[in-house]
Amino acid sequence: MILDAGGRKGRLMKQDARSKKLLGMYERMVLIRKYEERIYYLFLEGAMPGSIHQSTGQEAGAVGICYDLRDDDYMGSTHRPAGHDLAKGVSVRGMMCEMFAKANGCCGGKGGAMHTGDIRKGVIPANAIVAGNMPIMVGIALGAKIRGSDQVAVSFFGDGATNEGAFHEALNGAAIWKAGVIFVCENNLYGASTPIRTTCLLENPAADRGPAYGIPAEIVDGCDVIAVNGAMERALKRARSGEGPTILELKTYRSCGHSRSDARAYRTREEEAEWATRDSIAKMREVLIAEKIAGKKDIEEIDDRIEREVEEAVEFAKNSPDPRPEDAMRHVYWEGGRN
Ligand SMILES: Cc1ncc(C[n+]2csc(CCOP(=O)(O)OP(=O)(O)O)c2C)c(N)n1
Ligand SMILES: [Mg+2]
Image 1 (cartoon, rainbow, N blue to C red):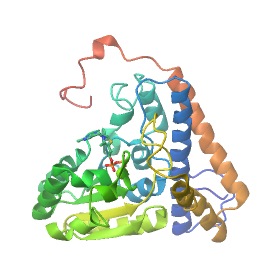
Image 2 (cartoon, protein in one colour; image 1 turned 30 degrees about the vertical axis):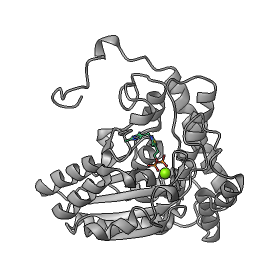
Image 3 (cartoon, rainbow, N blue to C red; image 1 turned 60 degrees about the vertical axis):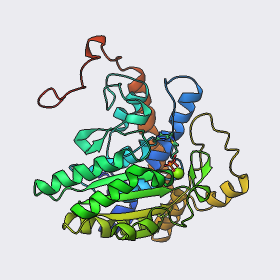
């Protein structure tokens, strides 16, 4: 019997480790895309409270970085966490319930879109303060080092974070302590509506600053999941072996608006169209077909299966209970054991 990356019956043509990995990464990228597309319409329908910040177009970064991490490695994100969380293994149901503010949400329905996470998967509930997770992830990596563990910590942040004081403190601290932290800058050219070129004169706002703190940096095509994963392999090796932090600057683009109400007046439709030609999922489909890992029909089946998984999560969330009023004051302090 031939199995796909998730061990399900299928017509996967190749079974070697590389083929399985490429297929697995493709599936995760599709999951993020379909999840976010579905969320977008649920918001438009008014089915969910709060607001959304989506990462459509940036899936290759999330997946290429998180694919080889273990559940006990840590990851921190900011105001756009859904792709990172799904890539690191937070369940679709848990994410969806959180969006509906339901008790079965990954944060018990108390976090909402900007604070999703699941400590069982090493995902620190997201910190919506720009650059806010960076010093936290350094501390977590330092903690692992002190315990003699090879666990690593990944900090995702945007280009806009690189002018924050916390960015500089975090880099310096990680460097002097040789903390096993991987700083991942998703440079999507804009901090909300502000072009990064108007707030930083450096071509590579994260990577160019690495050497000033004694941290090696790599600049990566953030639309190419294979390239991202390759750079991550090198950074992961350094971090696990106690050699210290690495900066990875991913050149990417968010094809959606900054948040729900963004008409994207600060950028041209030509620029958007140009980046659309580099779409990571379309590119990966071509690789899978060219390397005879999967055929067009296999890919359609995978896409359909993931769409059903997302739809099932929507139904599950809609039918889930609301958080109980008596639990309002819980989950503030550690309550012993698992909260
Ligand atoms: C310290 C702080 N300042 C301002 C904001 C408001 N804010 C939310 S997102 C954002 C833009 C961040 O841009 P970037 O870091 O490039 O991330 P991107 O939105 O592009 O993913 C800003 C300024 C905030 N959340 N935190
Ligand atoms: Mg940005």
